[in-house]
Image 1 (cartoon, one colour):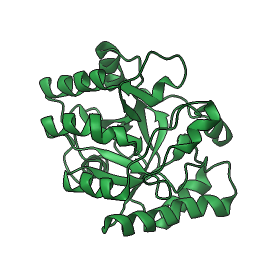
Image 2 (cartoon, one colour):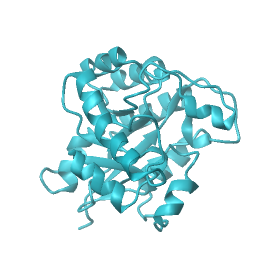
Image 3 (cartoon, one colour):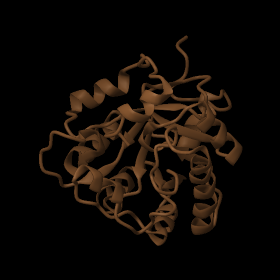
Image 4 (cartoon, helix red, strand yellow):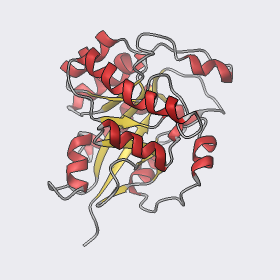
Length: 256
């Protein structure tokens, strides 16, 4: 019998975007997103909350075949406008990873690439998402490459983001996402010490039974993905060869 497996999909912005050549893995046109969600619904893919998937990977609960988890990095305001209505239409859960010290502010790190800085959701908006059944996790305080910055700063980003989001939401925050996919063993240890139940990466593969919940791989959904390409990503099983920690921090500048 094949091991339990789940496809954790990684999205960023959902909206109306002109054709582009750079940073394609951080954009998804809203029409394509709607088509992707309709396809999952039509073919009866089980779309799970992240907590359900982790329980299944740990062998604590059944994990249905073809299971999918939807994650959205950074917490862009356009999630509320474009993604939430589609998710609500099909009753799909999702995880939004927010930046605790950037709530309601522009995504300032875009300026380094010469891109316009889209707005991020406010604390009030995140609370509204929670009432709608959308989960919220931490993406750090300010979107740092955690494996490259000073260790004290990395620990602060991981630990304080948890407590500040918990204060903003009025409930525990149990899940983390490494910005830019930048992590190493020390960063993973910090996430464990902070008390997170899981942390997602930008390592592109399906998550399998026995997976370290603090190193969960995901499959990036890109601006140019057709439905055929989307289906192919859902069924890819082989994990890419892991890059050394220093490369993980630098190779994925455009993926988180």
